[in-house]
Length: 496
Ligand SMILES: Cc1cc2nc3c(=O)[nH]c(=O)nc-3n(C[C@H](O)[C@H](O)[C@H](O)COP(=O)(O)OP(=O)(O)OC[C@H]3O[C@@H](n4cnc5c(N)ncnc54)[C@H](O)[C@@H]3O)c2cc1C
Image (tube, rainbow, N blue to C red):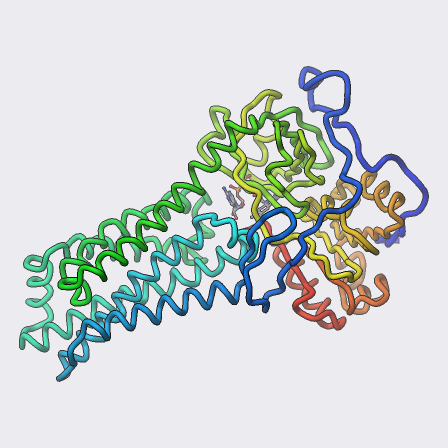
Protein backbone atom coordinates (compact mmCIF):
# COMPACT_ATOMS: atom_id res chain seq x y z
CA UNK A 1 0.00 0.00 0.00
CA UNK A 2 1.77 3.16 -1.14
CA UNK A 3 0.42 5.58 1.44
CA UNK A 4 -1.00 5.15 4.84
CA UNK A 5 -3.49 7.52 6.34
CA UNK A 6 -3.36 6.41 9.93
CA UNK A 7 -5.32 7.77 12.83
CA UNK A 8 -3.09 7.61 15.83
CA UNK A 9 -4.41 5.80 18.76
CA UNK A 10 -3.10 4.67 22.14
CA UNK A 11 -0.78 6.49 24.43
CA UNK A 12 2.76 6.48 23.12
CA UNK A 13 4.72 8.63 25.50
CA UNK A 14 4.76 11.98 27.18
CA UNK A 15 4.22 14.71 24.59
CA UNK A 16 7.42 16.42 25.57
CA UNK A 17 10.85 14.97 25.41
CA UNK A 18 14.31 15.73 26.64
CA UNK A 19 16.67 16.48 23.80
CA UNK A 20 19.55 14.32 22.75
CA UNK A 21 22.52 16.40 21.69
CA UNK A 22 24.33 15.43 18.51
CA UNK A 23 27.62 14.66 20.25
CA UNK A 24 28.05 13.33 23.75
CA UNK A 25 30.12 16.41 24.55
CA UNK A 26 27.13 18.52 23.62
CA UNK A 27 25.18 17.61 26.74
CA UNK A 28 24.28 21.11 27.88
CA UNK A 29 23.63 20.50 31.51
CA UNK A 30 23.23 17.27 33.30
CA UNK A 31 20.26 16.77 35.55
CA UNK A 32 16.80 18.07 34.89
CA UNK A 33 15.44 18.17 31.36
CA UNK A 34 16.03 21.41 29.52
CA UNK A 35 13.05 21.04 27.26
CA UNK A 36 9.97 22.40 28.88
CA UNK A 37 6.62 20.73 28.60
CA UNK A 38 4.23 22.44 26.29
CA UNK A 39 2.15 24.68 28.49
CA UNK A 40 -1.07 23.07 29.61
CA UNK A 41 -3.79 25.64 29.09
CA UNK A 42 -3.42 27.24 25.70
CA UNK A 43 -2.80 30.96 25.76
CA UNK A 44 -4.15 32.43 22.59
CA UNK A 45 -4.59 35.82 21.15
CA UNK A 46 -7.86 37.30 22.29
CA UNK A 47 -8.75 39.11 19.12
CA UNK A 48 -7.07 37.52 16.15
CA UNK A 49 -8.09 39.62 13.20
CA UNK A 50 -9.10 38.22 9.87
CA UNK A 51 -7.93 40.06 6.81
CA UNK A 52 -11.03 42.16 6.65
CA UNK A 53 -10.99 43.48 10.19
CA UNK A 54 -10.38 47.17 10.50
CA UNK A 55 -9.09 48.03 13.90
CA UNK A 56 -5.97 47.93 15.93
CA UNK A 57 -6.16 45.73 18.99
CA UNK A 58 -3.92 44.46 21.72
CA UNK A 59 -3.90 40.74 22.31
CA UNK A 60 -3.71 38.98 25.65
CA UNK A 61 0.06 38.91 25.47
CA UNK A 62 0.16 42.66 25.03
CA UNK A 63 1.02 42.58 21.31
CA UNK A 64 -0.43 45.51 19.48
CA UNK A 65 -1.91 44.18 16.24
CA UNK A 66 -3.05 46.29 13.38
CA UNK A 67 -5.18 44.97 10.58
CA UNK A 68 -4.32 45.04 6.88
CA UNK A 69 -7.27 47.30 6.17
CA UNK A 70 -6.14 49.83 8.77
CA UNK A 71 -2.62 49.90 7.37
CA UNK A 72 -3.88 50.33 3.81
CA UNK A 73 -6.18 53.13 5.00
CA UNK A 74 -3.23 54.89 6.67
CA UNK A 75 -1.08 54.52 3.54
CA UNK A 76 -3.95 55.82 1.38
CA UNK A 77 -4.48 58.80 3.68
CA UNK A 78 -0.78 59.61 3.47
CA UNK A 79 -0.95 59.50 -0.33
CA UNK A 80 -3.95 61.85 -0.26
CA UNK A 81 -1.99 64.24 1.99
CA UNK A 82 0.84 64.16 -0.57
CA UNK A 83 -1.58 65.16 -3.33
CA UNK A 84 -2.92 67.93 -1.09
CA UNK A 85 0.65 69.15 -0.57
CA UNK A 86 1.16 69.41 -4.32
CA UNK A 87 -2.21 71.15 -4.77
CA UNK A 88 -1.37 73.62 -2.01
CA UNK A 89 2.02 74.47 -3.53
CA UNK A 90 0.83 74.79 -7.13
CA UNK A 91 -0.88 78.07 -7.97
CA UNK A 92 -1.95 76.92 -11.44
CA UNK A 93 -1.03 74.72 -14.34
CA UNK A 94 -1.02 75.86 -17.93
CA UNK A 95 0.27 74.66 -21.24
CA UNK A 96 1.67 71.27 -22.16
CA UNK A 97 4.94 71.96 -20.36
CA UNK A 98 3.07 72.94 -17.18
CA UNK A 99 0.92 69.81 -17.23
CA UNK A 100 3.89 67.54 -17.85
CA UNK A 101 5.89 69.19 -15.08
CA UNK A 102 2.91 69.06 -12.71
CA UNK A 103 2.40 65.36 -13.37
CA UNK A 104 6.12 64.77 -12.89
CA UNK A 105 6.05 66.62 -9.57
CA UNK A 106 3.09 64.58 -8.31
CA UNK A 107 4.78 61.31 -9.24
CA UNK A 108 8.03 62.46 -7.65
CA UNK A 109 6.24 63.33 -4.41
CA UNK A 110 4.44 60.01 -4.42
CA UNK A 111 7.75 58.21 -5.02
CA UNK A 112 9.37 60.15 -2.14
CA UNK A 113 6.48 59.16 0.10
CA UNK A 114 6.34 55.60 -1.24
CA UNK A 115 9.95 54.76 -0.39
CA UNK A 116 9.28 55.77 3.21
CA UNK A 117 6.25 53.46 3.28
CA UNK A 118 8.29 50.61 1.80
CA UNK A 119 11.00 51.01 4.42
CA UNK A 120 8.39 51.28 7.20
CA UNK A 121 6.85 47.99 6.10
CA UNK A 122 10.24 46.32 6.61
CA UNK A 123 11.08 48.14 9.86
CA UNK A 124 9.87 45.16 11.94
CA UNK A 125 7.24 47.33 13.61
CA UNK A 126 5.56 44.97 16.09
CA UNK A 127 1.94 45.93 15.29
CA UNK A 128 2.58 45.18 11.62
CA UNK A 129 4.57 42.02 12.25
CA UNK A 130 1.95 40.60 14.62
CA UNK A 131 -1.11 41.86 12.77
CA UNK A 132 -0.17 41.33 9.14
CA UNK A 133 2.80 38.97 9.18
CA UNK A 134 6.27 39.23 7.67
CA UNK A 135 5.45 37.22 4.56
CA UNK A 136 2.56 39.49 3.58
CA UNK A 137 4.53 42.62 4.46
CA UNK A 138 7.34 41.36 2.27
CA UNK A 139 4.92 40.79 -0.59
CA UNK A 140 3.54 44.32 -0.19
CA UNK A 141 7.09 45.65 -0.05
CA UNK A 142 8.05 43.81 -3.25
CA UNK A 143 4.91 44.93 -5.07
CA UNK A 144 5.32 48.51 -3.82
CA UNK A 145 8.95 48.46 -4.93
CA UNK A 146 7.88 47.78 -8.50
CA UNK A 147 5.47 50.73 -8.39
CA UNK A 148 8.13 53.02 -6.91
CA UNK A 149 10.64 52.17 -9.64
CA UNK A 150 7.95 53.01 -12.23
CA UNK A 151 7.05 56.24 -10.39
CA UNK A 152 10.69 57.33 -10.28
CA UNK A 153 11.18 56.61 -13.99
CA UNK A 154 7.97 58.43 -14.94
CA UNK A 155 8.83 61.35 -12.63
CA UNK A 156 12.24 61.82 -14.26
CA UNK A 157 10.88 61.57 -17.81
CA UNK A 158 7.90 63.87 -17.26
CA UNK A 159 9.95 66.54 -15.50
CA UNK A 160 12.56 66.40 -18.24
CA UNK A 161 9.97 66.60 -20.97
CA UNK A 162 7.99 69.32 -19.23
CA UNK A 163 11.06 71.48 -18.64
CA UNK A 164 12.19 70.93 -22.24
CA UNK A 165 8.79 72.03 -23.58
CA UNK A 166 8.72 75.10 -21.34
CA UNK A 167 12.28 76.07 -22.25
CA UNK A 168 11.79 75.25 -25.97
CA UNK A 169 14.88 73.09 -25.70
CA UNK A 170 15.73 69.60 -26.86
CA UNK A 171 15.56 66.71 -24.41
CA UNK A 172 19.32 66.26 -24.65
CA UNK A 173 20.21 69.83 -23.81
CA UNK A 174 17.55 69.95 -21.07
CA UNK A 175 19.05 66.77 -19.57
CA UNK A 176 22.46 68.43 -19.49
CA UNK A 177 20.96 71.57 -17.92
CA UNK A 178 19.14 69.61 -15.24
CA UNK A 179 22.20 67.55 -14.36
CA UNK A 180 24.64 70.44 -14.22
CA UNK A 181 22.62 73.44 -13.12
CA UNK A 182 19.91 72.17 -10.80
CA UNK A 183 21.12 71.46 -7.28
CA UNK A 184 21.41 67.80 -6.25
CA UNK A 185 19.77 66.45 -9.41
CA UNK A 186 22.96 64.58 -10.30
CA UNK A 187 22.86 62.79 -6.94
CA UNK A 188 19.17 62.02 -7.41
CA UNK A 189 19.95 60.57 -10.84
CA UNK A 190 22.55 58.26 -9.32
CA UNK A 191 19.91 57.29 -6.73
CA UNK A 192 17.44 56.55 -9.52
CA UNK A 193 19.91 54.23 -11.25
CA UNK A 194 20.62 52.47 -7.95
CA UNK A 195 16.88 51.90 -7.52
CA UNK A 196 16.60 50.51 -11.05
CA UNK A 197 19.53 48.19 -10.33
CA UNK A 198 17.89 46.93 -7.15
CA UNK A 199 14.61 46.56 -9.04
CA UNK A 200 16.29 44.47 -11.73
CA UNK A 201 18.04 42.07 -9.34
CA UNK A 202 14.78 41.75 -7.40
CA UNK A 203 12.91 40.58 -10.47
CA UNK A 204 11.97 36.95 -10.08
CA UNK A 205 14.06 35.68 -12.98
CA UNK A 206 17.17 37.52 -11.80
CA UNK A 207 16.65 36.75 -8.15
CA UNK A 208 16.55 33.03 -8.75
CA UNK A 209 20.03 33.26 -10.23
CA UNK A 210 21.74 35.01 -7.32
CA UNK A 211 22.32 33.80 -3.78
CA UNK A 212 19.88 35.11 -1.21
CA UNK A 213 22.69 36.89 0.65
CA UNK A 214 23.99 38.54 -2.55
CA UNK A 215 20.51 39.79 -3.34
CA UNK A 216 19.96 40.92 0.25
CA UNK A 217 23.16 42.97 0.51
CA UNK A 218 22.70 44.55 -2.93
CA UNK A 219 19.16 45.35 -1.94
CA UNK A 220 20.51 47.42 0.97
CA UNK A 221 21.74 49.95 -1.61
CA UNK A 222 18.17 51.19 -1.53
CA UNK A 223 19.04 52.99 1.71
CA UNK A 224 21.90 54.75 -0.09
CA UNK A 225 19.54 55.66 -2.93
CA UNK A 226 17.04 57.19 -0.51
CA UNK A 227 19.77 59.22 1.18
CA UNK A 228 21.14 60.46 -2.16
CA UNK A 229 17.72 61.47 -3.47
CA UNK A 230 16.55 63.22 -0.33
CA UNK A 231 18.11 66.65 -0.76
CA UNK A 232 16.95 67.25 -4.35
CA UNK A 233 13.37 67.18 -3.10
CA UNK A 234 13.92 70.33 -1.02
CA UNK A 235 16.34 71.95 -3.43
CA UNK A 236 14.19 71.59 -6.54
CA UNK A 237 10.70 70.52 -5.52
CA UNK A 238 8.14 73.30 -5.80
CA UNK A 239 6.24 71.84 -2.84
CA UNK A 240 9.16 72.49 -0.49
CA UNK A 241 11.26 75.38 -1.74
CA UNK A 242 9.22 78.04 0.07
CA UNK A 243 7.31 75.99 2.59
CA UNK A 244 9.14 75.48 5.87
CA UNK A 245 6.26 73.51 7.44
CA UNK A 246 6.19 71.08 4.52
CA UNK A 247 9.95 70.60 4.82
CA UNK A 248 9.58 69.98 8.54
CA UNK A 249 6.86 67.33 8.24
CA UNK A 250 8.50 65.63 5.28
CA UNK A 251 11.81 65.42 7.19
CA UNK A 252 9.96 64.21 10.30
CA UNK A 253 8.40 61.40 8.27
CA UNK A 254 11.82 60.26 6.99
CA UNK A 255 13.39 60.63 10.42
CA UNK A 256 10.62 58.69 12.19
CA UNK A 257 11.04 55.74 9.85
CA UNK A 258 14.86 55.87 10.11
CA UNK A 259 14.57 55.81 13.92
CA UNK A 260 12.09 52.91 13.75
CA UNK A 261 14.45 50.91 11.54
CA UNK A 262 17.42 51.55 13.84
CA UNK A 263 15.33 50.78 16.90
CA UNK A 264 13.55 47.62 15.84
CA UNK A 265 16.19 46.12 13.57
CA UNK A 266 19.29 46.94 15.63
CA UNK A 267 18.68 48.18 19.18
CA UNK A 268 15.82 45.84 20.14
CA UNK A 269 17.65 42.64 19.06
CA UNK A 270 20.82 43.75 20.85
CA UNK A 271 18.83 44.62 23.97
CA UNK A 272 17.12 41.22 23.83
CA UNK A 273 20.55 39.57 23.39
CA UNK A 274 21.78 41.25 26.57
CA UNK A 275 18.60 40.55 28.51
CA UNK A 276 17.93 36.95 27.48
CA UNK A 277 21.49 35.70 26.94
CA UNK A 278 20.47 33.26 24.20
CA UNK A 279 22.84 30.30 23.88
CA UNK A 280 22.77 27.03 22.00
CA UNK A 281 22.10 24.20 24.43
CA UNK A 282 22.40 21.36 21.98
CA UNK A 283 21.57 19.94 18.59
CA UNK A 284 19.46 16.87 18.00
CA UNK A 285 19.07 14.98 14.72
CA UNK A 286 15.40 14.51 13.89
CA UNK A 287 15.48 12.63 10.61
CA UNK A 288 17.00 12.67 7.15
CA UNK A 289 18.77 16.04 6.93
CA UNK A 290 16.68 17.59 9.68
CA UNK A 291 17.99 18.72 13.05
CA UNK A 292 16.59 20.59 16.02
CA UNK A 293 18.54 23.29 17.80
CA UNK A 294 17.70 23.97 21.42
CA UNK A 295 18.35 27.52 22.48
CA UNK A 296 18.39 28.45 26.12
CA UNK A 297 18.03 31.84 27.70
CA UNK A 298 16.62 33.69 30.64
CA UNK A 299 13.28 35.46 31.05
CA UNK A 300 12.06 33.96 27.78
CA UNK A 301 8.44 34.37 28.88
CA UNK A 302 8.94 38.14 28.44
CA UNK A 303 9.29 37.54 24.70
CA UNK A 304 5.62 36.54 24.64
CA UNK A 305 6.33 34.25 21.69
CA UNK A 306 3.42 32.20 20.43
CA UNK A 307 3.34 28.80 18.75
CA UNK A 308 3.37 29.43 15.02
CA UNK A 309 5.77 32.36 15.22
CA UNK A 310 9.37 32.54 14.09
CA UNK A 311 12.55 34.38 14.99
CA UNK A 312 15.43 35.54 12.83
CA UNK A 313 18.42 33.74 14.27
CA UNK A 314 21.99 34.98 14.12
CA UNK A 315 24.39 32.38 15.47
CA UNK A 316 27.59 34.04 16.59
CA UNK A 317 30.15 31.67 15.08
CA UNK A 318 32.90 32.71 12.71
CA UNK A 319 30.98 31.58 9.63
CA UNK A 320 27.40 32.42 10.61
CA UNK A 321 27.46 35.72 12.54
CA UNK A 322 26.97 37.92 9.48
CA UNK A 323 23.55 36.62 8.41
CA UNK A 324 20.30 36.04 10.22
CA UNK A 325 17.86 33.37 9.05
CA UNK A 326 14.21 32.84 9.91
CA UNK A 327 13.19 29.60 11.61
CA UNK A 328 9.87 28.90 13.28
CA UNK A 329 9.56 27.61 16.80
CA UNK A 330 8.99 23.88 16.55
CA UNK A 331 7.71 23.49 20.10
CA UNK A 332 5.70 25.74 22.35
CA UNK A 333 8.12 28.30 23.81
CA UNK A 334 9.32 27.53 27.33
CA UNK A 335 10.48 29.92 30.03
CA UNK A 336 14.12 28.95 29.52
CA UNK A 337 14.34 27.07 26.25
CA UNK A 338 13.22 27.48 22.65
CA UNK A 339 13.44 24.90 19.92
CA UNK A 340 13.83 25.34 16.19
CA UNK A 341 14.02 22.59 13.60
CA UNK A 342 15.74 23.01 10.26
CA UNK A 343 16.07 21.04 7.06
CA UNK A 344 19.51 21.27 5.50
CA UNK A 345 18.94 22.86 2.13
CA UNK A 346 21.88 25.26 1.95
CA UNK A 347 24.97 26.69 3.67
CA UNK A 348 23.24 28.05 6.71
CA UNK A 349 20.85 25.25 7.47
CA UNK A 350 23.66 22.70 7.01
CA UNK A 351 25.95 24.60 9.35
CA UNK A 352 23.35 24.45 12.12
CA UNK A 353 24.13 20.78 12.74
CA UNK A 354 27.70 21.80 13.66
CA UNK A 355 26.67 24.35 16.28
CA UNK A 356 28.36 23.82 19.61
CA UNK A 357 26.67 24.20 22.96
CA UNK A 358 27.37 27.61 24.42
CA UNK A 359 27.31 29.37 21.02
CA UNK A 360 25.77 32.77 21.59
CA UNK A 361 22.75 33.73 19.54
CA UNK A 362 21.02 36.95 18.61
CA UNK A 363 17.32 36.21 18.21
CA UNK A 364 15.19 38.84 16.53
CA UNK A 365 11.49 38.37 17.14
CA UNK A 366 9.06 36.86 17.71
CA UNK A 367 7.52 37.63 14.35
CA UNK A 368 4.60 36.35 12.36
CA UNK A 369 0.83 36.41 12.31
CA UNK A 370 0.55 32.66 11.76
CA UNK A 371 -0.94 32.20 15.21
CA UNK A 372 -4.19 30.77 16.43
CA UNK A 373 -7.18 32.98 16.95
CA UNK A 374 -9.89 32.19 19.44
CA UNK A 375 -12.74 31.55 17.09
CA UNK A 376 -14.19 28.52 18.87
CA UNK A 377 -14.00 26.55 15.63
CA UNK A 378 -12.28 23.22 15.18
CA UNK A 379 -8.85 23.40 13.60
CA UNK A 380 -7.18 21.47 10.81
CA UNK A 381 -3.41 21.72 10.45
CA UNK A 382 -1.94 20.87 7.06
CA UNK A 383 1.82 20.35 6.96
CA UNK A 384 4.08 19.64 4.01
CA UNK A 385 7.66 18.48 4.66
CA UNK A 386 9.56 20.67 7.10
CA UNK A 387 6.49 22.95 7.18
CA UNK A 388 5.51 20.78 10.12
CA UNK A 389 7.62 22.97 12.46
CA UNK A 390 5.17 25.78 13.37
CA UNK A 391 2.27 23.34 13.21
CA UNK A 392 3.99 20.99 15.64
CA UNK A 393 4.20 23.91 18.11
CA UNK A 394 0.54 24.76 17.55
CA UNK A 395 -0.63 21.15 17.70
CA UNK A 396 0.17 20.82 21.36
CA UNK A 397 -1.36 24.12 22.43
CA UNK A 398 -4.48 24.74 20.38
CA UNK A 399 -7.75 24.36 22.25
CA UNK A 400 -10.64 22.26 21.01
CA UNK A 401 -10.74 19.59 18.32
CA UNK A 402 -7.65 19.50 16.13
CA UNK A 403 -6.74 17.37 13.14
CA UNK A 404 -3.20 17.29 11.79
CA UNK A 405 -2.60 16.18 8.21
CA UNK A 406 1.07 15.70 7.47
CA UNK A 407 2.12 15.27 3.83
CA UNK A 408 5.56 13.82 3.12
CA UNK A 409 7.20 12.27 0.08
CA UNK A 410 8.69 9.36 2.00
CA UNK A 411 8.46 7.79 5.45
CA UNK A 412 11.95 8.99 6.36
CA UNK A 413 10.92 12.59 5.70
CA UNK A 414 8.44 12.54 8.56
CA UNK A 415 9.86 14.24 11.61
CA UNK A 416 8.45 14.37 15.14
CA UNK A 417 6.36 11.26 14.53
CA UNK A 418 6.66 10.10 18.14
CA UNK A 419 5.92 13.56 19.48
CA UNK A 420 2.93 14.03 17.21
CA UNK A 421 1.49 10.64 18.07
CA UNK A 422 1.99 11.34 21.74
CA UNK A 423 0.33 14.73 21.57
CA UNK A 424 -2.54 13.26 19.58
CA UNK A 425 -3.00 10.52 22.14
CA UNK A 426 -2.79 12.93 25.05
CA UNK A 427 -5.37 15.32 23.68
CA UNK A 428 -7.51 12.94 21.67
CA UNK A 429 -6.60 14.60 18.39
CA UNK A 430 -6.16 12.93 15.03
CA UNK A 431 -3.00 12.72 12.92
CA UNK A 432 -2.95 11.52 9.32
CA UNK A 433 0.35 10.86 7.59
CA UNK A 434 -0.06 11.08 3.82
CA UNK A 435 3.14 9.53 2.52
CA UNK A 436 4.34 8.86 -1.01
CA UNK A 437 4.63 10.59 -4.36
CA UNK A 438 1.50 11.50 -6.31
CA UNK A 439 2.37 8.80 -8.82
CA UNK A 440 2.61 6.22 -6.06
CA UNK A 441 -0.59 7.42 -4.53
CA UNK A 442 -2.32 7.63 -7.88
CA UNK A 443 -3.71 11.09 -7.35
CA UNK A 444 -3.63 14.12 -5.15
CA UNK A 445 -3.74 13.24 -1.46
CA UNK A 446 -4.66 16.83 -0.66
CA UNK A 447 -7.71 16.97 -2.89
CA UNK A 448 -10.95 18.51 -1.62
CA UNK A 449 -12.56 15.09 -1.58
CA UNK A 450 -9.76 13.57 0.48
CA UNK A 451 -9.69 16.49 2.93
CA UNK A 452 -13.46 16.30 3.39
CA UNK A 453 -13.24 12.59 4.04
CA UNK A 454 -10.50 13.02 6.64
CA UNK A 455 -12.04 15.98 8.44
CA UNK A 456 -15.78 15.88 8.93
CA UNK A 457 -17.26 19.38 9.08
CA UNK A 458 -14.16 20.77 7.36
CA UNK A 459 -15.93 23.84 5.98
CA UNK A 460 -16.59 25.09 9.51
CA UNK A 461 -13.00 24.79 10.64
CA UNK A 462 -9.98 27.07 10.74
CA UNK A 463 -7.20 25.72 8.51
CA UNK A 464 -3.49 26.39 9.02
CA UNK A 465 -1.22 25.38 6.15
CA UNK A 466 2.57 25.37 6.05
CA UNK A 467 4.89 23.75 3.54
CA UNK A 468 6.47 24.29 0.11
CA UNK A 469 4.86 26.90 -2.14
CA UNK A 470 3.27 24.34 -4.48
CA UNK A 471 1.80 22.34 -1.64
CA UNK A 472 0.42 25.50 0.00
CA UNK A 473 -1.37 26.71 -3.09
CA UNK A 474 -2.72 23.24 -3.88
CA UNK A 475 -3.92 22.78 -0.30
CA UNK A 476 -5.48 26.23 -0.14
CA UNK A 477 -7.28 25.58 -3.42
CA UNK A 478 -8.52 22.21 -2.17
CA UNK A 479 -9.70 23.76 1.09
CA UNK A 480 -11.65 26.42 -0.78
CA UNK A 481 -13.10 23.74 -3.07
CA UNK A 482 -14.11 21.87 0.07
CA UNK A 483 -16.08 24.92 1.17
CA UNK A 484 -13.67 26.48 3.68
CA UNK A 485 -14.05 30.28 3.43
CA UNK A 486 -10.91 32.16 2.48
CA UNK A 487 -10.82 34.02 5.82
CA UNK A 488 -10.54 30.68 7.63
CA UNK A 489 -7.45 29.63 5.68
CA UNK A 490 -4.12 30.77 7.14
CA UNK A 491 -0.87 30.01 5.38
CA UNK A 492 2.83 30.31 6.20
CA UNK A 493 5.35 30.10 3.38
CA UNK A 494 9.00 29.52 4.30
CA UNK A 495 10.05 32.13 1.78
CA UNK A 496 10.04 35.91 1.69
C1 LIG B 1 8.94 32.75 8.21
C2 LIG B 1 9.90 31.62 7.89
C3 LIG B 1 10.00 30.55 8.76
C4 LIG B 1 10.85 29.49 8.45
N1 LIG B 1 10.92 28.41 9.29
C5 LIG B 1 11.69 27.35 8.96
C6 LIG B 1 11.73 26.20 9.79
O1 LIG B 1 11.10 26.13 10.84
N2 LIG B 1 12.51 25.16 9.39
C7 LIG B 1 13.24 25.20 8.22
O2 LIG B 1 13.93 24.23 7.90
N3 LIG B 1 13.21 26.29 7.42
C8 LIG B 1 12.47 27.35 7.77
N4 LIG B 1 12.46 28.46 6.96
C9 LIG B 1 13.31 28.46 5.75
C10 LIG B 1 14.75 28.82 6.15
O3 LIG B 1 14.81 30.15 6.58
C11 LIG B 1 15.63 28.65 4.95
O4 LIG B 1 15.59 27.31 4.57
C12 LIG B 1 17.07 28.98 5.27
O5 LIG B 1 17.19 30.34 5.59
C13 LIG B 1 17.90 28.62 4.06
O6 LIG B 1 19.20 29.15 4.17
P1 LIG B 1 20.42 28.35 3.58
O7 LIG B 1 21.63 29.21 3.60
O8 LIG B 1 20.54 27.04 4.29
O9 LIG B 1 19.96 28.00 2.12
P2 LIG B 1 20.09 28.85 0.79
O10 LIG B 1 20.31 27.88 -0.30
O11 LIG B 1 21.06 29.98 0.95
O12 LIG B 1 18.65 29.51 0.65
C14 LIG B 1 17.53 28.79 0.20
C15 LIG B 1 16.34 29.72 0.21
O13 LIG B 1 16.05 30.10 1.56
C16 LIG B 1 15.67 31.48 1.63
N5 LIG B 1 16.65 32.18 2.46
C17 LIG B 1 17.98 32.00 2.47
N6 LIG B 1 18.57 32.80 3.38
C18 LIG B 1 17.57 33.52 3.94
C19 LIG B 1 17.53 34.53 4.92
N7 LIG B 1 18.65 34.98 5.52
N8 LIG B 1 16.33 35.08 5.24
C20 LIG B 1 15.21 34.66 4.64
N9 LIG B 1 15.17 33.68 3.71
C21 LIG B 1 16.35 33.12 3.36
C22 LIG B 1 15.68 32.00 0.21
O14 LIG B 1 14.36 31.89 -0.31
C23 LIG B 1 16.59 31.06 -0.51
O15 LIG B 1 16.26 30.96 -1.87
C24 LIG B 1 11.63 29.53 7.26
C25 LIG B 1 11.54 30.63 6.41
C26 LIG B 1 10.69 31.65 6.71
C27 LIG B 1 10.59 32.82 5.76
